[in-house]
Image (cartoon, rainbow, N blue to C red; front, side, top):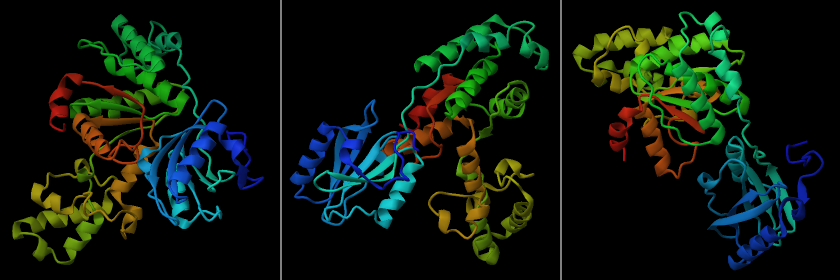
Amino acid sequence: MSNYGIDLREKTSFQTSDLFTEKAQEFLREAIHNANDNEVFFVGTPDSTQRIDSVKLYARGNQQAVPALINVAEPGTVIIHNHPSGNLTPSSADLEIASTLGQRGVGAYIINNEVSDCYVIVLPDKTQEPVPIDIAELAKLIEPNELFSQKFPGYEYRQQQVDMLKMVVESLNANHVSLIEAGTGTGKSLAYLIPLVRWSVTNKERCVISTNTINLQEQLIYKDIPALQQILPEKFTACLVKGRQNYICKRKLNMILQSPETHCDEDELEELYRIADWAKTTNEGSLSDLNFVPDSELWEKVCSDSESCQRAQCASFNDCFTTRARRTANAANLLIVNHHLLFADIAIKKETGFSMDTGILPRYKRIVIDEAHHIEDVATSYF
């Protein structure tokens, strides 16, 4: 049984009245008729009864196909298209698109031209309101003689930290933007980390923390977050997200090693072989994991890049360091990034219609920008 109250085991074809309001059915019929009964691509939004009530038309096609504009569909919505033949069996292309969008919580339906029959490929995720987190409960954690004073090494009570934590909780619960200025020694990282952890675990939402400096990133990843993982009752994960150019590409490295003299200058060969030896043993494959600083031009020849990446077609795909890092990020509750990577991701998403399956970062809804006084310079370099 799905969260829509529809059991896909019972049948594959449904009466449209089960899934669409009368208003939506009429809109679909008229749009298909106006397209000379060819295929038409729609996106529908369910109402409180989980029936499609609002429908937008995005593309018209011919008798066999229609452009599928998958980037316009948000989680909880449904992509809809008609099969003029009346045979609602999904094609291979239909299934591939439905599989991709289903991972994002987007449903996929096929209807006939009369809008009297519907084939459900994937049901959408049911839209749920976020669960508020308890401001008093979280504030108590950092009060004197409470959990953090007992278990956090070197912890000192600070009223400003409690005040900031409460502001962060209020912002998360109300879904609004807060601008918070905190002086040195406030303990601001814990003031936002504690609410973010609770919010992410409670609402199953990924959260992003963006910083300007490597020092703060390392403090979060190697000190504050590990401490919270030991103290807080929630089980959560966090990862530092880096651009793909920080990772070695095994395919590019192996290609160069087949004919190193062709691709490298003589003074680069020694470093190349050192990188090759390191690539056999490194777990992360990241530039920061390398025990020396390679020549920048040489690293560019062997690092991962989007233009040459073969993705799933690559022979090294299953062992790809970049792919492994992406999978880790997809599974994490908290993502730690720098401002440049954050705005690079936003710039990519802007070009692709803000589809959350494009860009550098996986889908997220909540973000804390620490060291925010630096973002103007970074943002204006991208826009």
